[in-house]
Image (cartoon, rainbow, N blue to C red; front, side):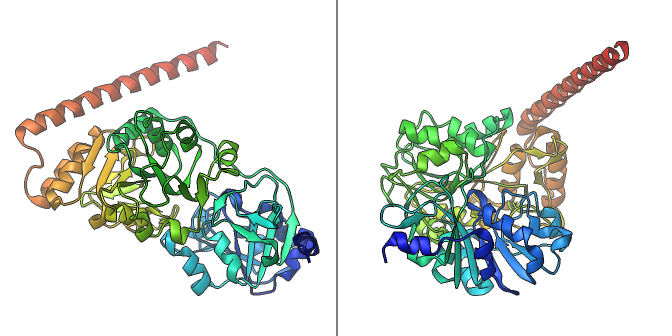
Length: 473
């Protein structure tokens, strides 16, 4: 049979394909921009036909229908990365959560979760009968090697990517043709705070470095500050739109990479059509399974590797909390530890934890004496190198406990430094700063307080004018 005949013999409707799922099955699906929503909608519509089926998924950009009350007894969700639509379900026990370093997830799924069914999204087949996993190779491609049933949503909007991202039509059980735009991750406007953080991170990046960036406001702010750099490389578990302009301009050209020279290496693409159009049929961009991309040993093969990740909280010892808020699961470990350790092992490498100094609109400090009770440490203190906020960079590697705490207090928001100074004195039985250093600190604290008072005064005046205007109307 030709590949076309093979493909057509396996082409069915979503309703026909999902009949292959049995009671008690574990079903792993693609995630993020590669989640097969077309087939998932059919499962949701026919949920009463299924009993005790577990859906295994990572970060979803959808609405997690599996956690709805009506799904009880029919579907449950085993989540590998918490998102907005399922955090509450995890905290209330409706949804399962499995924690793991990202590079180990392919092994965890295959040898511990052991799904029977894989549902993925792919591009249409090429002239040789090969489909591409496009934006999300990560753990997704690997599941199609061993699952008994493999169902693929064929979507013309899925870009065709190079690297270890293709598979022949003969290796699938069913194909379902559903064309729909991929869910996108739009780039939001970069805040002033994020731009300051981006500059402080960019100051630690040198010509010829190889970067891991991630997605979100801070990575985009860093990208905006890299236009004076040369010959940068890119080896990252995922990226967003922020890297595209740098790639097209040749700022990121991968010329100095000591592994995969000349190639951008990714596990997944989390962007809009801007990123998808760039990676489509682009031989300079390769997508590979995450147990390769995020393997610390493979990461370390890139000299001058710089990893940049964010966090929710860090204590004065340098313990980093990135995926929990107290007992509540906020996201997941992801690839943070993979890249922190890979960058540390890299010749000339550096790891950076970047974050705003405050949360809750400035009401709480992210730098704290003790991490919130119940929170899980994501990156241990011994792994942490640089910590960056809008107030500067603190280098922790090789520092004593006192030196670490002092460095972190210096980049905390000025409003919270007095409290952190008191906590330092309680812990170490000495003042954190000399009299001369304290003068500089107090000047910055005083200036911040005065600016805060001015801002509050201006806001009150503005609100009062709005109230008076409303009354007059």
